[in-house]
Image (cartoon, rainbow, N blue to C red; front, top):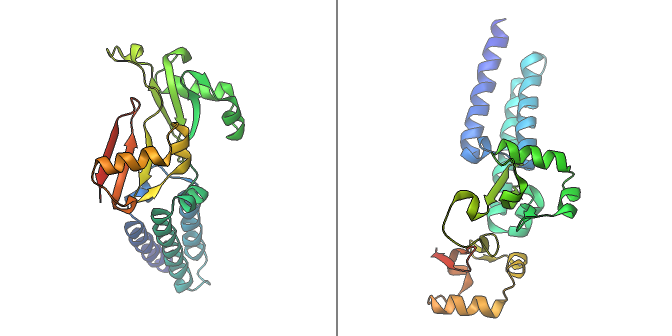
Length: 216
């Protein structure tokens, strides 16, 4: 009994340290990779906790091995957009300017009933009130209503606010989605006295084609 109690405390401390190392993002809304790591952490901690014949060092080593894997993957995800989208997935537009993207629904294996249910959960009982709905990589649904629904005296968005540069990396598919090209982007950078795309921390084109830029 005492042995199990002590082993439980050791593994608890090991997992607590691991989660602190991995950062707050691990315990927030999780993408696929974060979910797998969390499930594996629970599994490798439970086995030596239940079986006294398994050396404690095996459990602790497995916990910190998974922690090393997660932090390494997170590092490469920050440095490479393609790697991040491959591992964690990317947002998917389910409703585009009031139109349901049925092909995207099939791709994500979401039925119309499930989409309507998520809209109701978020407070939108009339689908005609929704201009954009985006399925995020963590499974959450982000909704942008038509401005008339929110009683905002402005025109509706031309498109979703879109990130074109993140941490010095150009997201080419996003640039194409807003019908812009690299020549347009270079002119924008030049107008802000930016010579190198690597110097840009974030460049976002909002729904009215206005640009937000922040340098590193």
